[in-house]
Image (cartoon, rainbow, N blue to C red):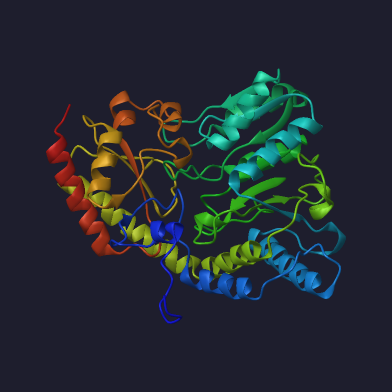
Length: 405
């Protein structure tokens, strides 16, 4: 082979080269596609060949500066307090699941009593709570109304009866399946007045609608990068000043020993870049996605009059639509739409491959025919009206071919 002949593309590169046009991507609550501006930013940092940010030499200090700049920018973006010795903290993690686990296990380890989580939480919160149950800890599941909104009055009643019996409370900012926004500021105030730690999983709402860590009275808040067009593999847990959690990993002094291990300057900076872009464009993105979602829902109901929109009795995120097609099976619809090059979801991505009905829709006490037939479409600011028109046409074709059961 001559020097001018390019080497054969390796197996892994060949496996991931695109040979077809990208599908209509309406599964952004699972993962957003990385913003090209973020990818370029990260590429320049990778090309800089950064050293270990814990190293004391100048190359290490350069990497450390990138980490700390990203940490400061993300704390500001989360609405944390950045003033002096009373500043809040940002811990970098691998993503939402780790951050949620750190909060639940951390608060449970430092305070006795029941762990309170809502019945509609993400599996990374419910799974942590359920594990603690197997270890003998009491867990209370906060119910929700048929609107999909968590019942804050039930929590208030539990606290009034005996606040000392509650270790911590975790309620998500907005639900990942329905998009319904939860009364987290009210819940945060209730918990703060009773001296009970409050954690919120804000993964879906952060940078989609205005959100401030301080304004919702949270002691801990989870956000992650890949839900807002940033890189996979990095998230944060924001902690209010004075909140202490025990480490669940050991072996280093990084991040005050709470989450030891070599930090990732390129991922951290990529996350911060994605947040900066998302917040600068938040208003325009939200308005656009809301208009597009309303168009999707109205046109689907025009084409399929029996279709039901889930969660319309509560405020919703602008990009999330849960549509049910009574008489059809959700997994059959999702698979058929995939064959039509429409990527959507039959539930949370963390339950991928599961045939179990949605615990969220069950908690809302919806009829079985709605639970069995609900599909989630989650848009992004990159979604086009042409893609929505093509999706609506695909839905009608799929339903015609499947036929009612």
